[in-house]
Amino acid sequence: MNGTPSIVALLLVHLNFAMSSVSAAEAMTDEMIAAELQRAINDPDSAVVYQVDRTKEELFDYLLANLADYSEEVVSIDFDHSRSMEPGDLGIGSDRIVNLSDGSFIVHHFLKVDPPGSFAYLTDMSRSTAEIPIDYSIVHYQLSESGNEQTTMQVAATFRPSSRLLSVFIRQAFDSALETDFSKVQELLARPDP
Image 1 (cartoon, rainbow, N blue to C red):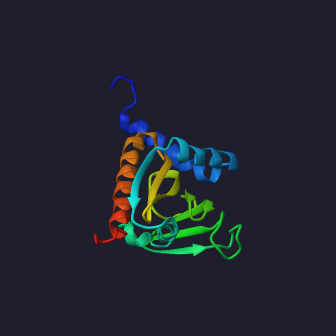
Image 2 (image 1 turned 45 degrees about the horizontal axis):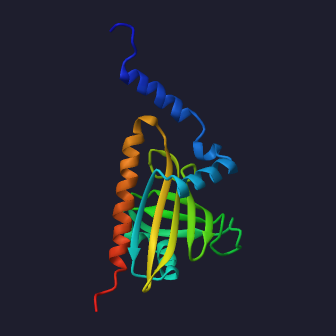
Image 3 (image 1 turned 180 degrees about the vertical axis):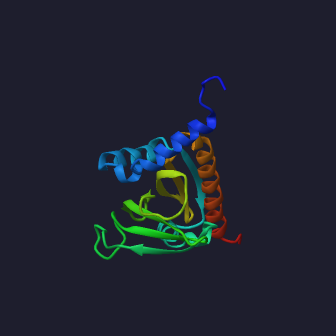
């Protein structure tokens, strides 16, 4: 070789650095989280919009409590409201623990809960056991009535891959997951034609 480091050597150096550094979710300040939430709303990395045959209230409750119905890898969810701003109830600071089919879990830490119009959470990878190559993601749900007991559902996400090398693949995975999960919500909640 001509003294130029190989791709493999560069990858190993990058991976060693990434594994030894502090998790991005752990290092995030409140200001950074607020900025990422605004980015999820105004300029997301990935987003979908669907019309759903339910009122905002029905859809809001369904999306929060029935993740296992519409997300393939999810087997169950649990809530921890011990840090909620609404003691004992869902609120900012609540956690949704998403139990996956491989035995691991993901922690969704709620940043915004505004029933029945919107909610948002941080996927806190520092408290999750699932092996997902992201430092964090922020997902924002916006629900708006569109008449005839239908709701427009917009789901938008921002994320930070754990490696820049994986950025394109992570974006494709988010796009695919949002399309798959929320088209399933639309299908599951479709009212039969009269």
